[in-house]
Length: 376
Image 1 (spheres, rainbow, N blue to C red):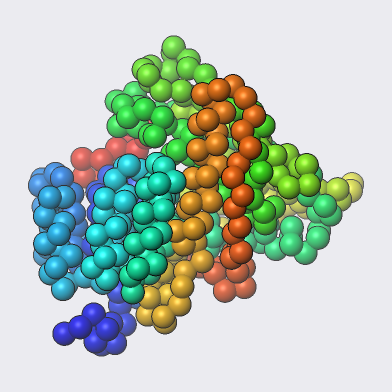
Image 2: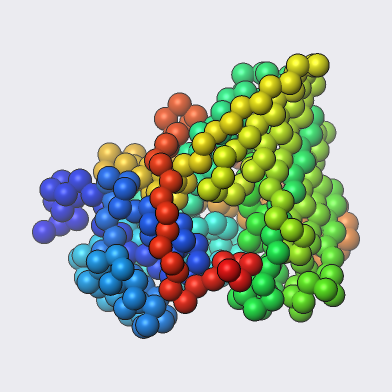
């Protein structure tokens, strides 16, 4: 039976998850079942013990090691994959999957270089399959509400953006052992960078400054634990953010315009009520948004795109747009100088009227041989 026939009969997209670390187990796996249009059928991991335990937990018959991934692609049992591997292993699985006509939902950042990102984009363009970068906040109701307020002119002319996003990293976590590509810039930086781009509706033109520090007490060895960045936007507007693996849990952003501002806390995480403080002149209002299953929501959206033959909004180019900025920041860190970014035209933006997802939250089971970044 062809994939198209299978989809027509089941109305559910059959997924394999690639990588079974903390984010996959704690957030994505629990959300698949209640999407209503997606089904978990296979798990790919390098740990046989983890594979057996998760297969039993989720009622999955098929498990594969990484070196048997090609067998999975040829099996005819899957329609799509979710990639939750470390950043530098995204193209490794995305490119052959797309070549095999398998749809791909890939965690951010898209990859660790624009070169690898462009390889994914080229593979998607040559394929009949669809690709989506997993920007879960593109479907989160509170985030979309803030975008609407900005677009409606409630803040006037945008002037500046600030954000701080931090978490205390366990020195034993794999993120502390793989250099800058696993550090806070690549791991946490895509959140404020993406927020800057979707709130301004524009692309940064330069990295004005980038500074990194290493605190001895952090115990993270040979990686920068904290990175602070200032970006210049078109029209001489400024956006700044700090990401850190050493500071305590902080998660907020503020967008300011000539008429008012929106402060959001938490801005980038999931599982907690989002609070927005909207200030216009001397008036201040507070709006709260209950948490949703952001991971199940993004998969539901992607599966709808597959089933309805539509192209997802946060595609490979959206991932490339953030990589362009990250690479500029890396260069600014290296040289200590301003870095002008190459021209980039991103015509497609978030559609707040059609992308909102409101799946209720789910309680994840205990993880199997996987810990959160904090070591919990």
